[in-house]
Amino acid sequence: MAVALPSFFTAIMIMSRLMAFIGISKNNDMSSKLQALDIAPKVSHDPSAIESASQDFGHIVKAAPQAVLLPSSPRDIASLVNFSYSNSVPFSIAARGNSHSLNGQAMAKNGVVIDMTSMKSGNGTGIRIASDGSYVDVGGQQLWIDVLNATLGLGLTPVSWTDYLYLTVGGTLSNAGISGQTFRYGPQISNVYEIDVITGTADFVTCSPNNNSDLFYAALGGLGQFGIITRARIPLEPAPKRVKWVRMLYTDFLDFTRDQELLISKNGRNDNKALNYLEGSLLLDQGSLDNWRSSFFPPQDQPKIISLITKFRIVYCLEIVKHYDSQTKTTVDKDLQQLLKGLSYLPGFMFEKDAKYEEFLNRVHSEELKLKAKGLWDVPHPWLNLFIPKSKISDFNDGVFKSIVLKRNITTGPVLVYPMNRKKWDDRMSAVIPDEEIFYTVGLFQSSGFDDWRTFEDQNKEILQFCEKAGIKVKQYLPHYTTKVGWVNHFGSKWSTFQKRKLQFDPKLLLSPGQRIFNNNQ
Ligand code: FAD
Image (cartoon, rainbow, N blue to C red; front, top):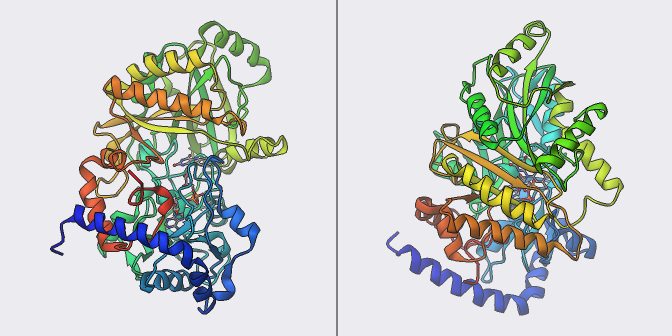
């Protein structure tokens, strides 16, 4: 292709704006043409379907599509994409997983949203475990909780998870899929053998590291820009029965991070002595001990924890898990003691639980039910998720946790902070992480009222401005930028590859417009 990329994208941008303009007057035309397709019975204009496709878990952004496709097979998706691709006025298309995005990433203003969950029990797109148990083939629309339940039925399990399991496989693979397992097993995108993708040119492509590898690496962490993932092949391992689940408290941030880094240095995938999970969080004066991260601390210990928090205003909580089963039942405690030997947590502030493996993995759901019962789940979520290089995490603690967060005194939701190893990520994939070998993820998972989410967004902006001024080269996870410059900076050296791949796999810029990467206004 001899066309210079920037001018190609400028031309496409102008065309797509013109088309959007024409498109408004031709919307009825698009709708009537859709009615002529074989998928017409699956295209909904129902106001309630449009309304739910216009919002997401963030409850901050709203954008209405013209229609919602309720596919029953990948073929239906390919028909829709093909129709738009060949149309004189193409329209945008967004796959919508479980709509747990925060800033409209799964929306398609004036386009068509594909409700992936309508394929949950569809033909050939379910959850199929290989006869030798080495992998599971999963439809992109499946929820991780359903993958867990299906594989546990055969004593098997994927190894890399998210904290919350009511997310779709296609949705998390389009970001990365991180949790306390990432330091050892890598993110979920590092745990995929093969995927089926319907590209923006309506091609149905099976890809893997050895087959159509460009599309494989593009789509994983690709923010839905290159195609719709309709199947993923995920490796399985024998499932443990139970877990030892430990939380330890610190008042000194350096001790806390030193211990986290020490623990994640033992990270061999097959090293049975290594931890299976490590995270960390902040206990804040203004927070609650029982936020949706799970009720953990025994009631009799809560008063002493609360007085510690009152005294220090921030307490750091290191959280780890070690799996065990009937064979390792007698040795797990000794292995754990060995791992925790020499750590600097506060004496008397180590708390332990013994739980079923699935109870631990599904820990956020019970809190979700409690919040739902109180009407506190479907509210605005002005979240901020960042990756921070290890060399600057202490500056971040001083400038953000100890300064901005304490001063503003508004953060009451969970705040996570834990490290991971860069070597467990594959740099050929679209996901973006800091350059250093160890980097931290920080998540401020805030809920707000419908009137005051801007106060939290202001805090998020202040945090980002502080990082920029202090030279802390953060990368956003679940990135959200409204300008081209923002995206170019985000992708850094990966930007030109990202652009080239867009041109190759979605040249008409149809897919996932809600990410606002190629269709922002600035
Ligand atoms: P959606 O929000 O529906 O879609 C996300 C993006 O992917 C959109 O751009 C959409 O168009 C695109 N997309 C959706 N399906 C497909 C597909 N099949 N093929 C291609 N593109 C597709 N993330 C973590 O990594 N770790 C966590 O522990 C974690 N915990 C969370 C807890 C909660 C309560 C919430 C709300 C979110 C959490 N997330 C976490 C973030 C979550 O992974 C992302 O928001 C993810 O995008 C949500 O998945 P979804 O299935 O709802 O996708």
